[in-house]
Image (cartoon, rainbow, N blue to C red; front, top):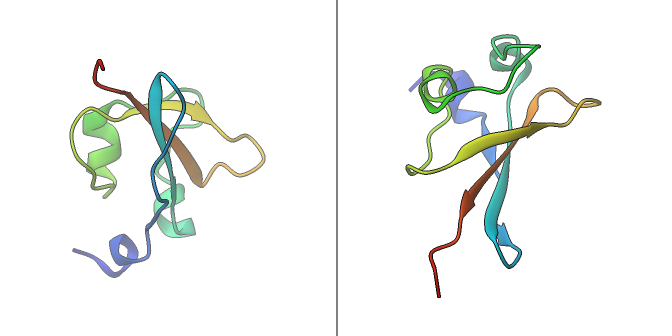
Length: 78
């Protein structure tokens, strides 16, 4: 694990009735690797050092702060 990977911040998880969410804050050095014109696939975000369990989808960009990645995954059926 690189020093930059150690600086990645993972939020607590939060939910609505359909999804579980979390946001990930990248250090500037890693944020430079985020594609500007598209959302990342799981292999792409893992490739820049983001580590989380399977099933998370990079679903939105926070335009004013492109170093913040927004993820969600479906909640299991009740």
